[in-house]
Amino acid sequence: PTFNFISKSFYFIIGVSMMFFSIMSIAYAFYEYVIQFFDGQPYSLESVFKPIIALTLGLAIFDLAKTLLEREVVYKAYADKKDEDRLLSKFMIAIIVALSIEALLVVFKTALHDPTQMPYALYLILGIGVIILSMGFYSWVSSKNSHLHK
Image (tube, rainbow, N blue to C red; front, side):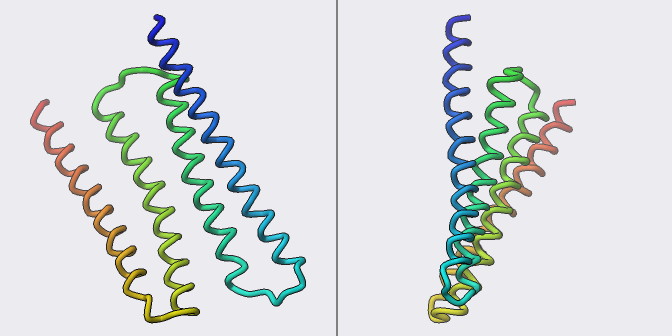
């Protein structure tokens, strides 16, 4: 019971801290947008990039914190392998979506400012593709293993 309390407390503190930083990132996104909008400088695509990056990061952090709090503090159930796979898939999908948005922004930013840097944007997109393929392979292997153990 003591270790369980310490463990839950630690996860609670980390989860709440991550939620706080997520909210701060989202607040920063709106702050940056408002400041750039009323700054008097010409409105540009660049002025949208920074807030979107902060929002995407805030979303990914929030999703991770929510999953951590749900899994380790609220439920603290040692679920079966299927639930673990679902949790991993949900988390990886959030990361893939966040990275995909970031990659799209990098492509636009690179195309507008320095097209010679486009290979780096391609590497990021290829990396996301590898993550997607890895996740698909993991899901396939997991489903094969679960069918063998039935």
